[in-house]
Image (cartoon, rainbow, N blue to C red):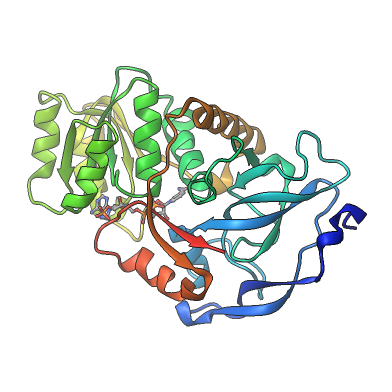
Length: 335
Ligand SMILES: NC(=O)c1ccc[n+]([C@@H]2O[C@H](COP(=O)([O-])OP(=O)(O)OC[C@H]3O[C@@H](n4cnc5c(N)ncnc54)[C@H](OP(=O)(O)O)[C@@H]3O)[C@@H](O)[C@H]2O)c1
């Protein structure tokens, strides 16, 4: 039950994107009469201001993902907005709080969403909603990879392979804040500039032949201690040759298969580690969320925003995130 305080609810319906069947971007339909979700006692209802678009939104919409929602569904998970109702069992949040999240109960691409309080990230007062929409999945994934799975330490050298994208930029900022030495890659001059502007000295173009030798030269031939990999199906074999002894590749993104030579891992006793934010236990998600809240307060966590789309242009946003010609920061839907 929504509280009586929510008397401003002049309507019980909202505008949202609804998917009735898996398929191309044309299955994203904007509806005006979608019921406003009814939050449970452990949930809050959020008036959504902006939504981060993630590649996984597209994989799910197209039906090519291991866990698919029941149809019909509202896509997305990375939301930012204002709490407008607090369930009876929720502590620490109140109406008017600015929050973001990486996991909703009812979907993100709509005017309202319900979110379990354990998946909320509190934003500083007056924090920009558009930036807030770029926090959840990218920064939690970066934390999962760099800290929870790899436990990289200050002084280690990490290659962020795809530093210009949402997760890559988050990983870059997090690694630098923890005292790691970052080498980054991007696919365009604009992307490389963005990575440099975020404090990375050695930035290479992953679309140019021979960039792997430049990475090796930047480490004095030693190789890197870790690689955060956004496109493993293209890079994994080459990554293994860029690792220092005991180094680790974190498989964050992959869009297909690749052949590797396991022998490349033997001499230097290197590792390949999978990363899945969706499989992280709740206590790990809470730890990562608290680290992100600290980053927001300290200011090292500062999302770079790329193209903004209105809800009407959601189909275009889904085309662009997969077929873009070079990342220019986090893609955001304005609700
Ligand atoms: N495992 C998880 O839990 C998890 C969580 C979130 C995301 N992901 C996955 O991680 C990947 C990145 O997500 P995102 O949100 O950062 O996407 P994004 O914002 O679209 O960024 C994609 C990044 O990949 C880079 N890239 C393109 N071609 C590359 C290549 N040949 N080698 C290295 N990098 C290349 C892009 O660089 P340019 O555009 O500059 O070429 C860009 O930096 C996606 O596959 C996504 O599904 C996984």
